[in-house]
Length: 123
Image (tube, rainbow, N blue to C red; front, side, top):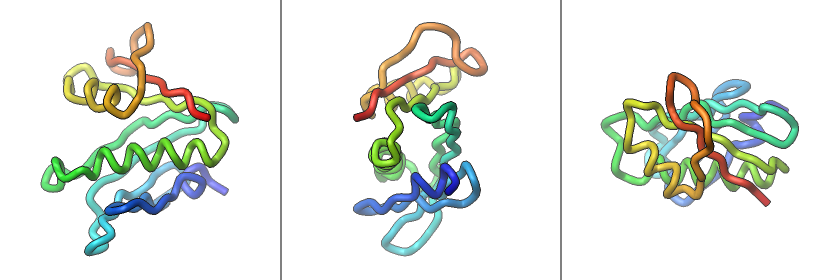
């Protein structure tokens, strides 16, 4: 089973649908429209990294990103992961607040492209 298949999940308004071995589509349940995507990677048997969680600009501010993040957290926990990481790009300041709101804590050291790493312990 691929990482994306492990993380496929059904939410209240959005689903995470496996779209490749490490990618998921964020799909709105009401009309079946794809509104975004996530890219993930299993760093080791206990850790998972969200490399990208992006909602298409026309569909932002309707809760798709927050619900997709919560679905990823819940699905990662069900799959047995104990650590979930994400990062905020240095030019996208709002993503820092997003990950904090999702229960992630900043980590010391430079993240990809000069950004900030965030981590959430599961279980």
